[in-house]
Figure (cartoon, rainbow, N blue to C red):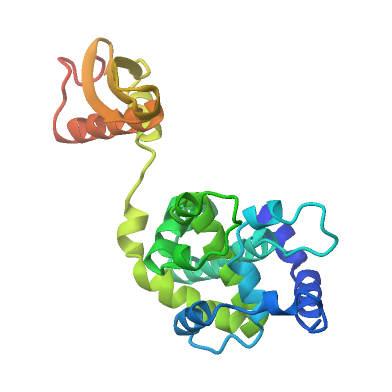
Length: 277
C-alpha cells in the first residue's frame, strides 16, 4: 500500500502538468496532436464520452518507439509511459476500493494478492486485446509494428495509459465507469479469489505442515530449438513422483507440475504413511 500511496501523491502535479500541455494549441506540431478519426471514434465508444482533449488520448496511444524516430529534435512527441504510470495508480486505487468493499472479511495480504491477479501485465494485455487497442497504437516507422501491436507489454501499457487519459479528461468518476465496465464487469471475482496460481508455494506449505521433505523439481526432458524450447519437469517428495508439467519455460513447467501434485494430494495419499513419506 505504501507504493500505491507514493504514486497517488504525485497525481495532482501530473494532472496540472498534462492539462497545461493539452491547452497549448499553438505548437508547431499541432496537426500531429490530433487523433486519427477512426481511433477517436473507437475511443469514444469505449469511454462513452467525446475525446475533446485529443492530445491526452493521442499520447495514451503513442508507443515509446515513436521517440526513436524523433531523436535529436527539439520538439518531439511524448510516449504513453507517463500516462501509464498515472493509469497504473488510478487502476490500483479503483480495484483496491472495489475489493475492500466486496470482501469486508479479507485481510490486507488477501486483498493485495487478489488485486495482483486482476492488474497483472497478462490480464491488462488481455483487456487491451479485447478492446482492440493494439490496432490503434501509434508506433515508430522504424519499429516492428505488427510485433508491437500484439506485444503483452505494449498492450498493458496502452491500457493503463488510456485509464490515465480518461482520469485527466473525465476525472475519477469517468475512470471508474471505464474500469467497472471493462475490468470489473469482465472478471468473475468470486472465482478469481478462490484460485491460487502459485501452486509451488501451496505445495511447500502442504509438505511443511506434514513435516515432509521439501518438493524436488527435476527437468526430465528439454526439447526444441533455442527459440521454441519445451521443458518437462517432474516434482517429487522422498522419491515419490507427485506431478509433471510441460511448458516453454522451466518456471511455468514447475508450476504445472506442482498443480498436478496438489490435485493428487487432494484426492488421495500417495505415500505409505499418513504422517511422513
